[in-house]
Amino acid sequence: MKNRVISVVVVLFMFSMSSNAQKINDKIIGSVGKVVKGFSFSNEEAVALAKAAVDQMDKENPVADSKDKYTVRLKKIFSKHTTENGIKLNYKVYKVKEVNAFACADGSVRVYQGLMDVMDDNEVLAVIGHEIGHVVNNDSQDAVKAAYKKEALIDAVSSQSDKIAALTSSDLGKIGNLIIDSKHSRMQESEADLYSYDFMKRNGYNVNAVESAFTILAKLSEGADASFLSRITSSHPDAKERAENAKMRAEKDGLYKPYVKKSEASKTKTVVKKKKK
Figure 1 (cartoon, rainbow, N blue to C red):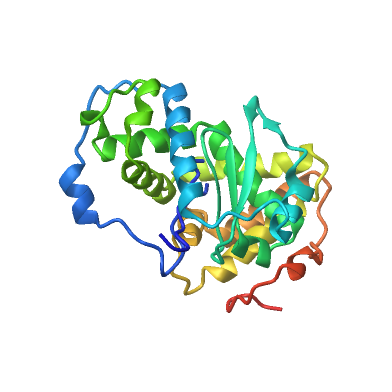
Figure 2: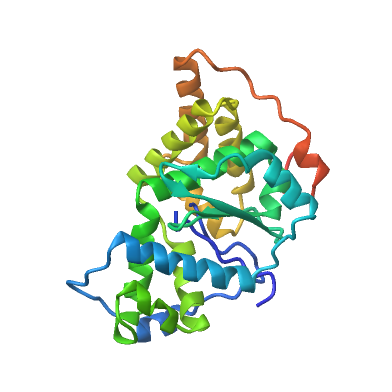
């Protein structure tokens, strides 16, 4: 699978962004999926399955090595965050030019090259904070469970986490796609937005980057056919309103200043048609 965009959150905002990305045929899913009632699936099992799915995603996507400029930059801005709310975090960059990022129930954070090209360090952190918020709030675990049920894999293997290894790479790929494409409710998105703001404030970052990040996503979503952007911008309130909400939070805290974009993004810049210079 070349340049496959397999994301989610299992937290995030996670998603298939590339026009070249291989998509799961809805008819195929419909033929194998079915409603599973009374199925017991613990958060611990969801975390174990998420890890297996992320491991498969890492095999299917081009991962930046430790010396790559994108990895070096992400390490500089995020390496101090080893845990969040008791969840152990790990991070990697996918060398894919789509604007995307996701965090999974197991603490995996994956940031796409395209996102780092259009956002500076603080804006990237704001997006990561949002994705981590979905994990901390258990939205990601719910997404894993929903994906597992939709693929009707309960028929193939036991729900016990020690049986997850029995899943094929194809099974894990399907779960990854479903997790990535999952959409959160308005309340879940709003709570993740708030988590992002609090994450920035708690760690001493510029909270005004939250407004700026949503403003960028709002501009990119205009006419863009990208599931990551549509996922973030389709929930009400939309991206522009969410940017305004972040601004009002900063004003309430006496922290608001018009955000001045840093130069980090330009150092790893990829041409993005929707971006205004």
